[in-house]
Image (cartoon, rainbow, N blue to C red):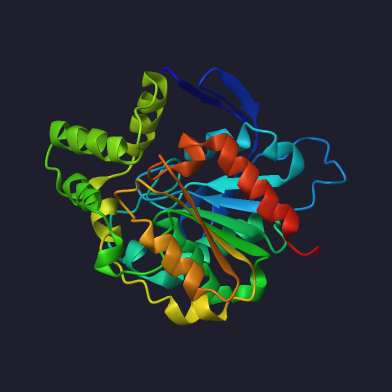
Length: 297
């Protein structure tokens, strides 16, 4: 934990100290979810978009560090949160809390309502593609201004997944700490195409190890019945993917873009499963261009 210190409404991470407003959310099924509002104290006239960033399986809100520590936080209102079973949120061991799309959708709705977000743009990484779409199944496409799926899961076609997805199964089935540690380290290596600095690897390992194996097991293999929903979305949908992704294959982005009436895909060469971390300048620029092209509220 040497690269991360948390206290009150501030965090020191990778050499930067950042302030935020902690939000405690209660889901419809009674869980406490930790959320973070990264808005600056003085909102500029251009600060007009509410953005909800949702992390993937076995991760935490800290995966968005290169967004909430960037100029994006000056231009937009960024809100993050830890999924149930992850980070600082409640981690009930019962499978029932992780199997139903309505629970995930209700969780997102609770975050949006607690934070007071108005027709936010949802940016969802990997498994969070399911979570965002679960929310839209519940609330309808008119509840958001836009959707960005980052290596995001939008279907459960086996041909859309790479061999590295099996590492999640190893993490979920680990029977001792050493086995879980080995599997988690390998999974994190597969989340990027090029090696990361040691401090970044340590940070990611820290928050991945906070997720119990039982939670990963309960989340695995859940259906993704979103085809009809995708075809009904009347907002711009952007799918950003790394060409070297071996967890969710780039074909997933093309599927998403084709399934949505206003869908578009961007595929980054030389990048793996984490475009927002591996190529943050390009990702932040593409996200800004997408946000600024959305119709005004």
